[in-house]
Length: 278
Ligand SMILES: N[C@@H](CCC[C@H](N)C(=O)O)C(=O)O
Image (cartoon, rainbow, N blue to C red):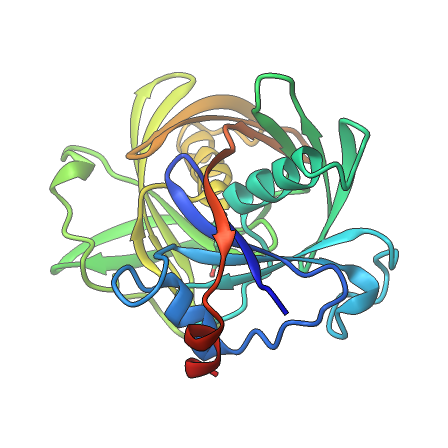
């Protein structure tokens, strides 16, 4: 069986997309790690398997079986509940491939259904759901302690506004320290610089990946963190990340993320390579 793939990115958070409507692929952790490896594989921050919800045994039971499901894996092979940049790339794939005809449709994720709108200019808006604030916590980078807002947007985040020092100077090559009692399943950690009332810059260290050039769920968490630093819970902001810019709105009941979704390549995996990495 030929195994098709696409390579795409959203603000340079890059993914291998594997169309697998009937859930036939044996997508082991080892294969995910090999696919994401930038030397022995295709190279990516994560894998997006495109599968019908009814074909994935661990899809949440309340998602309609015909809804397309984003089976997301981090580069280290771990499973994450949600990926904001990935869901835009995923939605764009479904639309370009003619698997969905409407411009607005639901995408299933482990964090629940996320309604998306694919726009004629190729950008995608995602309804990211309600932002849950979980408390104030700290992280440590090279001995420097940063305080931030814990945020749950389906997956866990710690959004830290950095005052008085440029975020560019932070060394994010190592895992920033955090309290595992607070984040027992790990955490994505954002470092935020306030640029203007509705404009921020962000860097991120992603759970299961390392520093990436963007994190969509992280941008929503970052805007929640920036708003909190100004005593607000709702608002909107442009978020500049190393890989580009996105727009985030946060309301009392839900949030949205709008940004690009780009395809770079498509092809077929080598069968021998696939079998060698079981
Ligand atoms: N890059 C993603 C988030 C991917 C999952 C994350 N690393 C986690 O483990 O929660 C995004 O764009 O949101």
